[in-house]
Image: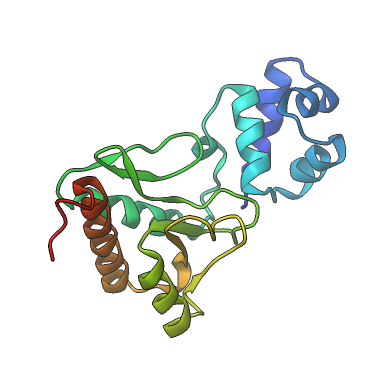
Length: 184
């Protein structure tokens, strides 16, 4: 992801921290921090660590150029339009929950492609989505054990995203009801 390097340098300077000190506090390598400060390119994991070390949100470091910001705002808007869905977004990105269960969130594991969304969905449905539309839906080793699919937000249409979030809600409703109360 692309971040605001000016803000990063200002925040580090405001605290009178060297690059080395920030890297240590954030738990990342010095060369990684130097590369981030010079290029503005950072992995989700690195910027989350830096933001936490500085006591800031990841969103504060996002640049205006970021094309997917609208996509994540759309995810939030579509999700919150669903009944009983709550916004649980935080420093790592967008997160939507239904009765405490994760409906969808920004895919933050380093195995995920940038600007991806993780959506809770049954494994059978996931397999069908992966087979039908591999350009939009994918899976990494990290997410494979979970009933979830990864979505390339830049490639999915609004109507399809809305439908997917609705399917996720139905999946979670069935999970909350439990096996005895599920419909035939």
